[in-house]
Length: 111
Image (cartoon, rainbow, N blue to C red; front, side, top):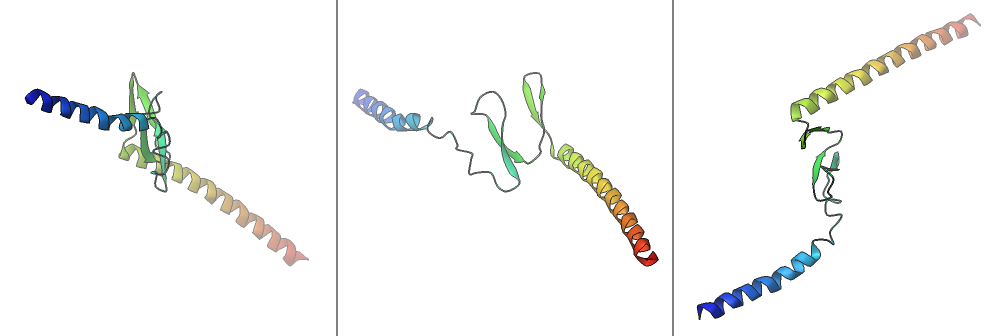
């Protein structure tokens, strides 16, 4: 009786696991629709199976055989430095535009 029950359970397990194994290769773009705005799906290695959903611009560095995802503190600090550089560039552009406008005003006032 135990042998028949064991065989029946084993047969049912194999029967129902077949479609799951067959479908696992069909979902190549499983992560495609899961990334929220501001997030990207990044490959973590050579295999397509190793993917992570990370914020845009997150750095992944390699230390030996291990891939290390940038921490929250590192990410925030790097992004603030990038924004500071962009802000300094915009300030310089605004300063040159103000000087140009002042020169144009003098030209118009002189005519």
